[in-house]
Length: 172
Image (cartoon, rainbow, N blue to C red; front, side):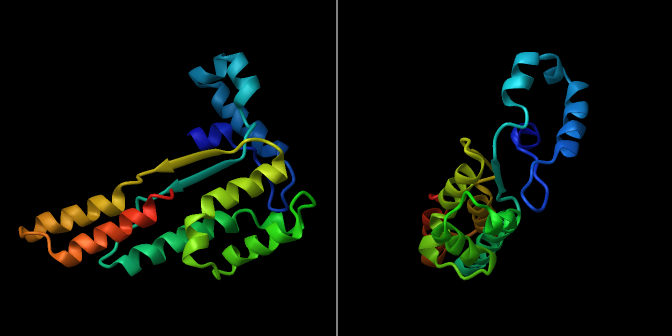
């Protein structure tokens, strides 16, 4: 809902989507927030938004978790393919962007992926970026649930797995 409220609606080519904005405005105007004119004028559809949800990030190994996060990041970037035609991003930013939409990014780039995407969104739109992270603790909780299901003492492998996941997630 927050993404729907704050996000600047854009078409596939990156142009502002007035039709989508009007549709959202019509829906939100029927809710209590729609009666708050100052909030609607000041915040509705005014910011680029990155929304990332970890609810489906589960796995048996660290590699499974990392692969799922890589795919999640790829999808975030792929939604902004219009960056490749943006005259507001420089060639270095576009080349960096290409790494993500071709899935050729390394672990270091993965860890900086939200920061990089937010920089590109800021460059393209000239506005601060709202970052919404949901169900951040799912990978960790999934591991705990598996441990409880086994009713055994956590193994060293479990502890290493958890430590690696926490290191990967701490950048988000």
